[in-house]
Length: 117
Image 1 (tube, rainbow, N blue to C red):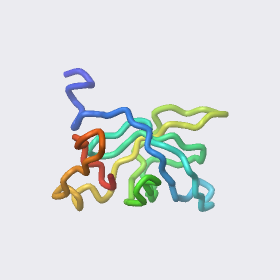
Image 2: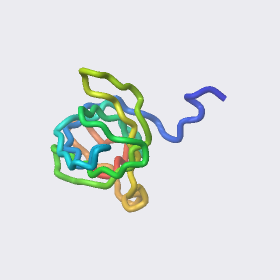
Image 3: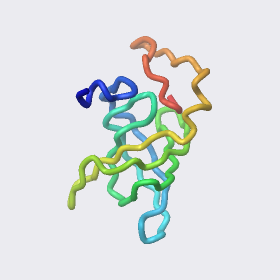
């Protein structure tokens, strides 16, 4: 089975402005305004200047509608010394919104039920 067949849900390349609140590996709290790179029903890939580690818990706020949820850091997908690193995150509250219908916009209904869209 190839990697695409192993995916749990379809991915959508979408840049959504977000605020990430967490704690770095040194134990220092941080808040960073950044953006998503890819979304799926379970989580996202995000750009982040601050370092985090797998299994960290972070809070993400969608800066377009101010919905928020807790996420678990799955791991790095790309690390960089000078640019933002890319991290996979999974919603720790995924079950809470399974009943919600996707919001509609001028572009139509989103096929994705990201936990706070």
